[in-house]
Image 1: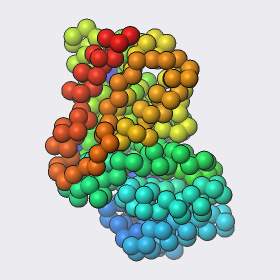
Image 2 (image 1 turned 180 degrees about the vertical axis):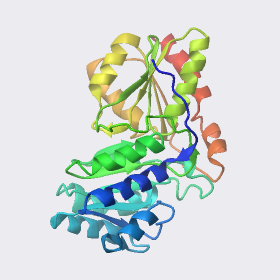
Image 3 (image 1 turned 45 degrees about the vertical axis):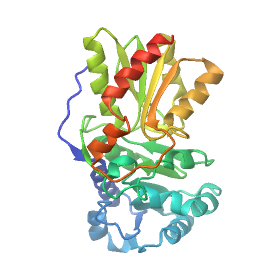
Image 4 (image 1 turned 90 degrees about the vertical axis):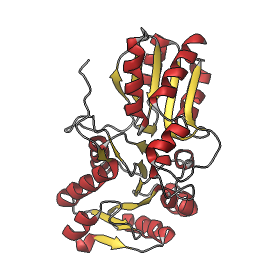
Length: 317
């Protein structure tokens, strides 16, 4: 398998901004709305190039979701942008009633997700958003791992008819997926093959999973790494194919254990192929203020914990 190389650290939110700008140039039905965070969401270029298709709604996130739903009736494809906490928890009623229930073609794009929001602290570090959004009928849920994948996903969700939740982050992280990739909703990526344990990772934890897999290789444990960028619909075929081979798994995510990727995989496997699973995520607690690196270490969202969890999963086979 081709060696995976970090092409240089970049923030995933900039991938969203670049993707949105490209869409604005190629599709006149693309419109964008932001809740007073245009710079943070990297939406300035789109706004400057398309002033008649950009709506700055101010600090009124619920209103933004209602406007976005309405714009779809006229054939527009709205992309909303704000922090993940304000894209989901603050406006859940509007999303449920005005977007998901009527299957409106709104793309809910959420930056600053998870602990790596950092210093803003627990009030802004939503760790429940994947769970909230995946429970909504009609909603597609995507959690990208780097700049390139976020850009590709942003472009692709414009082609999907129906609501989408696209989750990405604030900090600069390794950029290691293909620059010219074609993003496919619902198709997980096997980025490192192995025989002893399957590591299913999403978002910022994909790179940590790769680090862990390389270290496991050095001690004679062959780890398979699957990049689960789409939480819903879940790629159950790829999951099963890997589990039939390894017979145990680790899940890794920057999200609450309850309601996250691990929950979805465990639910699927428990009724299909019961399997020893170790889950890495935040365990029923809020976050706190700190640097992204320090928080990931404190909450165990790193390669070290993935390695220990892999060993434990193997011992339970």
